[in-house]
Length: 337
Image (cartoon, rainbow, N blue to C red; front, side, top):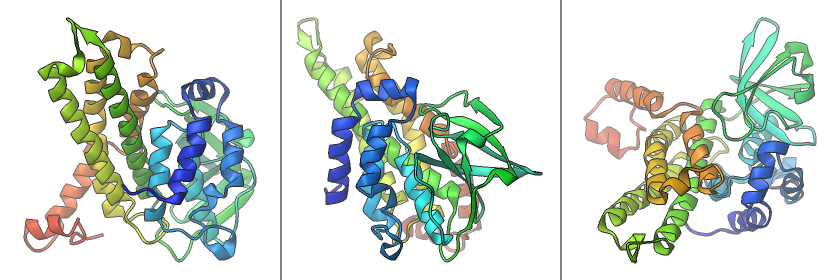
């Protein structure tokens, strides 16, 4: 992936503020508000908002590097969620309140709004809860129920509010706002970024760790495992580029499905290889590798694992007209919406 000024600037911020100590601290204290303020001051959360509404007016493919950087550094803030939330709000003719903003799909149950696995939901100020083309802006402090998500990596909470608690309600118009596709795209990019770090850590460890008088990297079995890990890391990066390849602010649902299918399918195997190369040391929660492999496994399941997206893609492929190769060559554009 080519470097660009936006992702380079965000990478520099993360390099300064999202080290292992900061990530561990956020696991206890919640989203890093100092880092969040730096990102807001730079306007990064509004990168997908049109210029005439105070944003940068970028397309999704232009922020792919930023979304991958969120995974590469295990960023202790919901930047990706906020970027999509700001774009959603702008499409609805409004803006979000100041403060740490997360987002998640929502279910309406009578007079209740339910949002599951809200990233940093235990420490954010606001949540954009999205149901179809409608987004509800809700204060975390107004939630009547808050439960920790059983298997999360970024302070995920399942939250519930009375519908009357919404401080704003947006109806996004003029753009396709498939929040499941947006979430799948974001998690695909984060998996790709995290795998870049996991590969770097594994290569470094294998080169430094000596066993039987030789570095681990000199053993053929280790070389083979690292080769597979490298293939997975680059495949995930390609999947992220595919998922983010949109000239609007939200992804194409088919591309997001294909990207998440690949990234989720890779995540567990890649995490296993990295831990195998690191040995018992890498399994320990105290090792920094755990910060990334934990996220890989959580992100694999969030917004649908490979089983969900493979099933969807397969069903739609069977409905498509023409020969199978045309379907593959078109990137799925031949299949019905």
